[in-house]
Length: 46
Image (cartoon, rainbow, N blue to C red):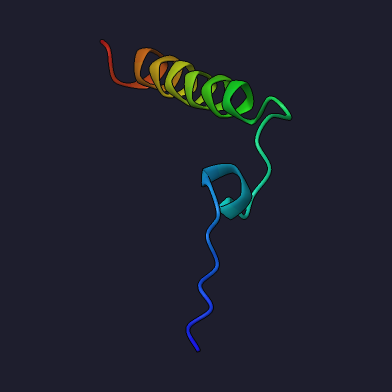
């Protein structure tokens, strides 16, 4: 007997969506880029 489990994308997803994870990721990435730009301007742009 072949019992197959059929789930849609939401049911099959292991992690939760939401919780502003996307915004935290983007803010962190922008902060790192700004930080590297400051270090570059302070030490190497002469």
